Image (cartoon, rainbow, N blue to C red):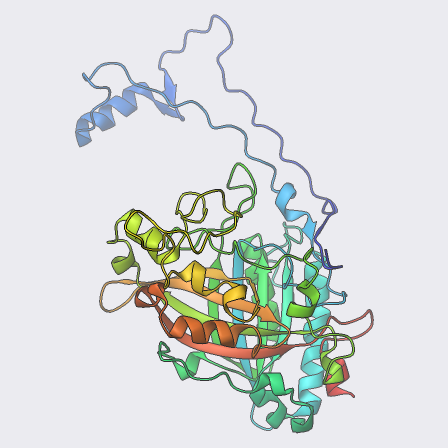
Length: 439
């Protein structure tokens, strides 16, 4: 594991809520009216008569639901803390968080290197405090006053245009060159690119929103929001055991992600300490894509057809050739008709590193749902975020392969795109990007 792992720490002052006092009647008591959730039986029956509610299959005895089990204390989630001053910025190798915000900013007219440095200094100070479960340095809104850190992470990056705006063109990495166009793109330029990028993730929605507002306020007159996207994942503890996440298509999503324990993980995901440019040492590159899922079309497919598109079983993520989620795919296995069990255009086959010259990226997305559009269909899908040491060796070759014939492509639409250079973590006493802005 890297040195960014989340550690447990009980939030100072947090208390586990006491169980509610029993409301049972004393032995021998003869109440005049049986109570249901604080409403008398007489009132309940009167309401039923007025509304036509049927109580019981034959209009007889009322059925009562058992009381739910006591909730898990929120401190079990709220006390989890990620560290800000680490080798690699937080928000890259941590597990998926329940809530997220992705925000791009453009520097204001007239703002340059000096203003950018002051902004990153403010942002870093605020992020460090909020990730520790403390209020923001000034004008805190108290939105998350009662919560702990809740695994909050804040990550900062620079877009291609940032270097022109700050006069730092000579420090722009070649890996930050614009991504090539893909035939499946339907990009909204207003929701693409940006000078600066902030990624916020947390396991509590109010904690995430609190960070969002604090950082937006910190921007002041130096930068304005270009676009913002809000996402979510399954909450911690929602499943009986830890599992790979599911996306809005219901598919287990992320099985093939490289693992921090892999021997090649660091080389594939992070710029080496001796890399170029020097200010990007221990950093990474984030590709951000808003991918619309055409859910009405997808959900019309029979289960077997959905599994053929992906190449994996929907129930457990196992390859169609058998086994469990992490079983190797038998790519040469055929059925009784001589057809490949995992089709040549199956998404899981096409995205394999060994089918893309070893290209690998760490996918760390959020789902999103922005309501129903003018055509009456869900505006929902994936806020795709992937990390790699060089996008030309990670995202680009895989996306080119998908662009040429992925079975999933008819059910998705790439609607926005951005690429950001994310420098290494800030040491104690430093701010993110200081080696670039003051080097």
